[in-house]
Image (cartoon, rainbow, N blue to C red; front, top):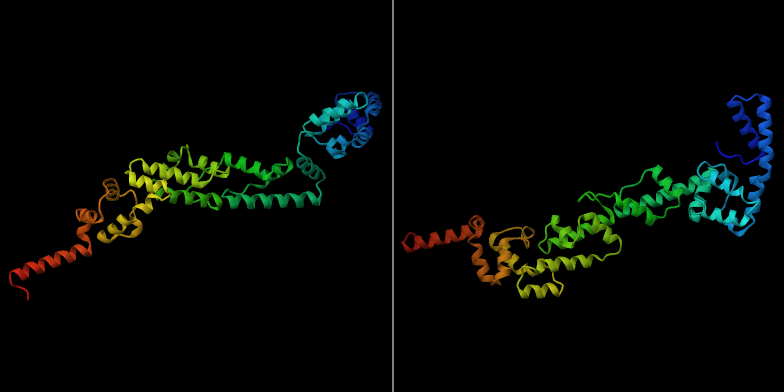
Length: 329
């Protein structure tokens, strides 16, 4: 039962408690009269009017509905009781109270909640739509109504909400959209262009998980910093000329293009199927193989015998042999 905010409430509450514990009606009335008389000494409504006339008191926005609130009311009522004897301490205690420590936004929103006015529901809906829209654009899931209303009443801003959501966020490659999904795709492409597989991305960048990388990006880390780390990693087993190109900002994927073009042509492969992880590409880079020697080495690959180029060469050789034996004109 909330503390009384009027003399009549003090009387009624005391009377009901007395009857509940077994007092006679006359005994209950006597107790209620005493409580009502005592209440008048610190009548919170009149005290509240005095408090609201002070600059600090007005700033806290304390009203009758708040004094009756189960969450904040009891502490505020207790503080108001000290006003008559020590107003300076009462004001100081108001600022230190749970209500006083809230932000002005939180106090305003909670006040609207207590009033249950159309304004409250309109502002709440606006807040929900705004936060959920921002979450989806970032790549997070929408929050449920109850969670959002809790955030609204406590005055949490978008940045704080995002931090809360990020704590339990689990990244699922291919299933997360928004800015997070785009950043991850960009990161994955940069890694692949430097011969780094998807599952190696966190360790190469010095993180324990993809979530930690995303958190760093959201905190302002430039994705180009990570791209440079990919190139640094790619340098470790490369000859000096390749290291120099990497230092100039080229990705390993760009550096292998001449070899890739030869490989695609010689083995008749799709262009995108050849990357920096291919053993032929790796050997050619390490040994600085010429393109002519690289082409010859590819013919030792078992895939070459199934190409049109191989069949054509076999056919040409057979025709030459037949001509040598006089079977062809």
